Structure formats: structure tokens, C-alpha cells
Image 1 (cartoon, rainbow, N blue to C red):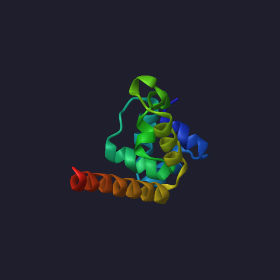
Image 2 (cartoon, rainbow, N blue to C red):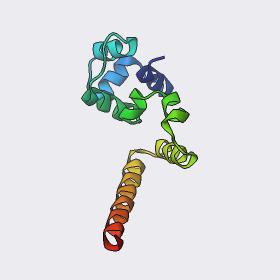
Image 3 (cartoon, one colour):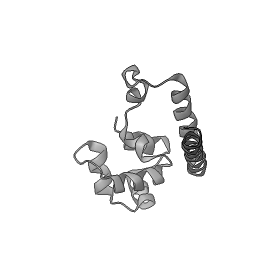
Image 4 (cartoon, helix red, strand yellow):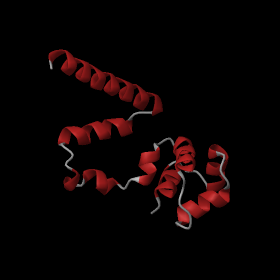
Length: 113
């Protein structure tokens, strides 16, 4: 099943309701859900906001994230799971914190290196 359709149905939305929430046409949503058209990143981001998920949630298949060939550790998988459970504000705060930690790690290496 198409991810846009899956999220839309989980929220109990019709295509016209999703169109109204996202500012896209019903035709565009129908074409994306049926696989006739691909969505641009801009369209995907609009749909993600309307569906209360992320753009990545709409384009990445779950098994890819769990694929051992990608080399994700259990900790990395847990971080992804936590991130997905957060609302948009929580995701932004977590990303801000992680970027701060990355910055600290870089500046610490420069002082000790």
C-alpha cells in the first residue's frame, strides 16, 4: 500500500479532506496514491505536515531502515524509533540537541587534537 494512503487512512481522512489540509488538489493526491505520479519534495513535505509525519516517513520503506546491510546499531534504531514517536516540535528539539552535541564533539576534538 502507498505510504500516503496508509497515513491518510490511519487518520481517517478522505482524499478531499487531505487535499484541503495540504493545499494540494484531490487529483494530485489520487495520482500519488495510485503510483501514477511521483511527489516532489515540496509536495511530500506538504503532505507530511497534513498527515502529521515526516517527509522521510512517506518516502522510505520501513524494511530499509531495519536492513542489517545498512549497519544500523541497536542504539541507532532506538534513536529512530524515539524520533518517530515525537511530535514535530519534539523532533525539532531533538535535532537541535543532537546538532549541539555534534558541535561540542567537534570543538572538543580541535582543542585536544
